Length: 309
Image 1 (spheres, helix red, strand yellow):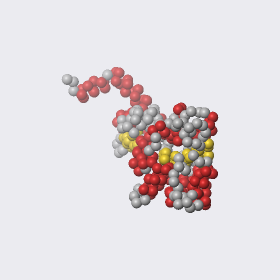
Image 2: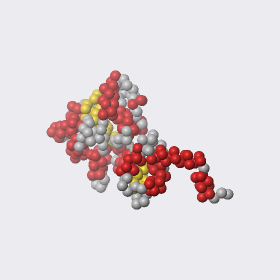
Image 3: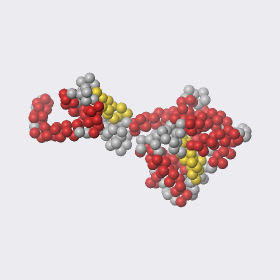
Image 4: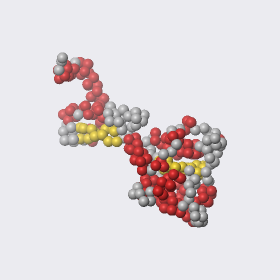
């Protein structure tokens, strides 16, 4: 049997191999990102270093960066799924360091948040919602238009209002949130849908838990937060003023887009927030929460038949 080094020598000496190598080398060195890297380090790079590093340079351009050639995290084409290469200069060679890609970062954050906040678990039909499956009848058109406008115009670190989707039971408010979240995910933009009644129960049970502050911090800082079914919870002064209040205040100050769904319009939600479980009437505190919600979101009514029936 022919030894491997003899095989490599024979291949290297063949005309076809030489031709393919020259083509590969040319394509690699003329790749825009490779040219930029070589130009940036031209003071220290020698021809010998570049030639020794051709294999690493080819490995770099043969993979996806910023998820530009991958349909999904599961469909990642890279050598290490979920990790993208970065060119680095070592002492005598060009090498590659692998770091998490945007989709991997989002997935890791999502898994961490799901472990921390149980109320992130929403129905599967919402998690897989899409605009293609969302019936575009007359009572939904305004909401669809505004959702599409948000998706087209959203840029991080710029002020963007979310939507306050309100209407009767079963008209598709939560489903539309899921469709928006899935479109954002396609753009590698992180969002979080939380079912408010369950969230507040969970937060309340975490008072003696070291995770309470961590949970609130996650909700404050999520790039796009979606609070599903606000107004369906039983109001207590503590959850309204010490949980919802600080979360919304932070997001208002940082201009972080926040979406809501509710069976109430603004006026109805304010009335709901005014009265605590003890029957206390606290108009000023309810109004303070509503000011933050009005700042963060634009009210949009969704109408139509109850599709849950």
